[in-house]
Amino acid sequence: MPRLMTLFTGQWADLPLADLAPLARKMDYDGLELACWGDHFDVQAALRDPAYVQGRRELLAAHGLQCVAISNHLVGQAVCDRIDHRHREILPPHVWGDGDPEGVRQRAAQELTDTARAAAAFGVKVVNGFTGSSIWPLLYAFPPTTQADWDAGFEDFARRFGPILDAFDDADVNFALEVHPTEIAFDIATAQRALAAVGRHRRFGFNYDPSHLAYQHVDYVRFIRTFPERIFHAHMKDVWWGHGSGEVGVFGGHTTFGDPRRYWDFRSVGRGDIRFEDVLVALGDVGYAGPLSVEWEDSRMDRVHGATESVAFLRRLDFPPSAVAFDAAFGQDRA
Image (cartoon, rainbow, N blue to C red; front, side):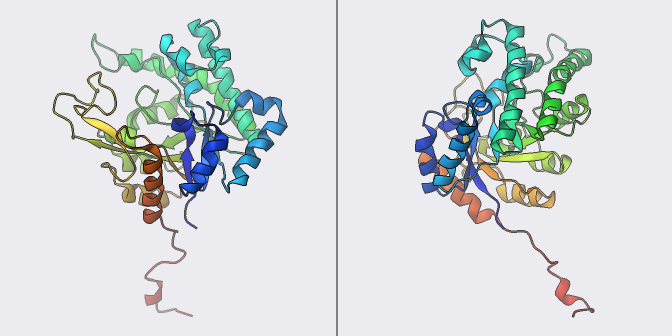
């Protein structure tokens, strides 16, 4: 069977789920990857009230939609980050609290733990998200940064995420980190280091997104083949690079998305430089059977137009796996 095509609702959280669900069906999606913000999926409501969970399922089913993953990137970001005023804008009030940085990190960890339990109550097996990172501000090594500095960051990540991953194990749910600048893992090398830091915990894997790797010039197809058993979910997002004015590099030049000077920018799926056929072949080769979830971001394009063309593009590329070797007919022992 072709893969399930879902839409990540994080960039649509301004729309109530009751409005987004019929729109997603009209755009030809099979399901939604629900964000834990806006009104799309409320973690605490899911834990308090079984009727809330049932209501979410019924709303989706009324429009012929499935949900196999939820995402709590915003809360996950605060677990390991150096907390500042920006976090207040993305966190639920009960997580932000009085804004004391360590208190915020601890409340974020509890909320992520609660998300595992809420996912189990909702009947999904994957929570996608971020981790944040205490060492992302040390990315560029001047003043000189030692391996001991970076080791401390991975140790901090392991200390904070170890109990979270144990809670995910208790709930029989996987945590899928979206490998991404600003997170503890942002390329293949740091993903390997993060996996080692948590002792290769069986609940720790990745929400694969080629766009965040490609503009860094990380081999995004090799990422799949490096972590074949750790690809728990897959975002489909496109990006182009090398199209700017030459004034801005990979670090972004403190410009906003859509600025024509940018070296890289996100594009609607199929309009950037990602080789999606190579991606789908690699996902098939490693046995990934989960959804292809469009995370639509393109500053230059109407989002309904873009999300519609994105799923159509992926459906043209997707294919069911073969049940027989193509050259089996040439064998001498045919029945």
